[in-house]
Every structure is written in C-alpha cells, then in structure tokens.
Amino acid sequence: MCRIRDLRSLPEEELLEAARRGPEGDLRAFDLLVERHKARVVGNCRYLTRSPDDAQDLAQEVFVKAFFGLGSFEGRASFGTWVNRIKVNHCLNFIKKRDRAVHVSLEEPGVKEAKEVRVPPEAEAKTVQGGERDRIREVLDSMPDTLRIPLILRDLDGLSYQEIADTLSVGLSAVKMRIKRGREEFRRKFAKAGSEAERN
Amino acid sequence: MNEETAGPENPGGEESLETGEPIEALSGLIEEPAPEFMNRVRNRINRKVLAVQVTDLSWTAPILIFMEWLRMFMEWFGSSSDESGGSRDE
Image 1 (cartoon, each protein chain N blue to C red):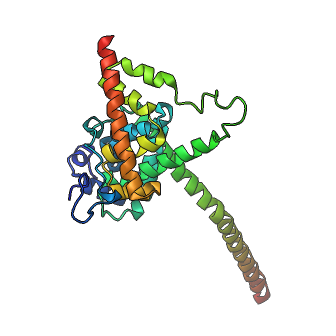
Image 2: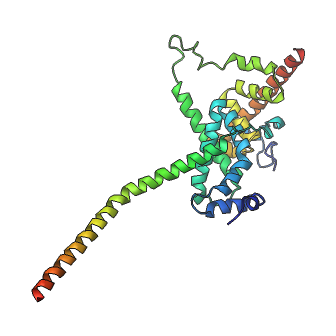
C-alpha cells in the first residue's frame, strides 16, 4: 500500500495514474492532485465569475467533475490543462445561468436602477484602496464580461486564441479584438487606481 | 510562432491584429481556498459515490429478493417431494 509520503514525491503523471487505478474509495492520490491545483482553480473561478461567494463552490464542483471523469481522461494533455478546460466550461455555464436569471428588458420601469443590472460603481471606487492584488481584483470586477472573460482565458489560463474562440463560440478576430481592448482597459484602470492610491 | 504578432501566414486582415503585451500580473493570480475546501471536495465525491451505489442497489435488490424467494420455494418444494416419496417407500 502506498504511503502518503511516497505519493507526494510522485510526478503528476504518476499521481494521476495512481488516482485512476487506486482502489474504490481511496482518494489519497486524487487529494494530492487537488492540493497542487486548488489555489489556481479557485482563483480562476473567482475572476471569471466575478463572484467570491461562488468561487469556492464552483472550484469544488470542478474537482468533483474531474474525479468522475478520470476514467475517460486519455492523458493527452496534462492534468492541469484538462482541469482548466473543465473549469472554464463550468464557470461559463454558471455565468450563462446567472445572466439568464437577471435578463429583463431595460425598458421596463425600475430596471435600470436595479442593482443586478449595474456594474457596481463601488468596484471602481475600491480600486484606490488595498494592495496590488486587491487593485487587480477590483479592476477585473469592474470590467464587463465581454472583455474580462477573454482576457482571463488568455493571460491567466494561457489558452490559445483559437481555443478561446471555440470555447466562447465567437470568431478568432473577435477574440483578438476583445483581448486587445481588455488589456487596454485593464492597464488604463489599473494605472488610474494606482495614481489615486498614491494620492491618498 | 508567437500568437501575439502577425505572421507570414496571416498577411494583413483582421487575423493579424496586434493584441498588445499580456498582463503579466494576471499570470500567477491565485486565490486561497477555504480551510475546509479539501473536506468538502471529498464529501461531495463520497456522497455521489453513495448515491450511485444506492441507485444500483434499488435496481438489483428486487431481483435479488425474488431470486432468494425462488430458491427458498424450490428448496421447500424439493424437500416436500422427498418426504412424500420416502413415506410411499415405507
């Protein structure tokens, strides 16, 4: 029987194989895989969905899906890349469901004032406080989905332009345009937040 | 081929659009999971495994029970025949 210390020293490919072939109910190898990737997956979920409250649950669901998908994982990509794909699809489905839930006509009375429709103005105001990571967080939260999501998929997840286009079901040129505009908007807001923080 | 710059295979047109330098601050961005994160993942997995096992059992249990009844009936029927056959022999 493998001791936990022995498993920890294994490279990821062997750990993955141990997780797939392990006896039913033995989660030790899979636990170690989760340990290695959980911080990144939680972070991605948080920034993709703009929801710190849901990020932990979403990340847990991603790993549960990965566990039950181990049998069909062919090993052509690394475990991290494979989990990344599960995470991206899971978060995008969550965003679609969430957006559908608040989809109303802006022409209806009272809708424009509804808090679910507006990007919270305090998201921009908060960029003047906190350290750099807080500033990054607040800048990302203040960006619309159309710019934030492709930017995160590219600069945080490292997906290729074609992969992003396929995932979001948009054209390659649209993806590149959104990433270009996303980067410009991020830099502009981040610089503005930095200078306001210095002034304060 | 660096995807950040246009290449000879994409001369001009929208596909040669420069997207600018990546935001380096994003590349290592992580969030600390909650302390109970691992326990929750394990619990979710164990609950799903249990649900699958109970569902399997709910399909197979009636068949198993029927088979047991059938076996008990055959044993009883078989032993009853032996007794009546034995009494005739006397």
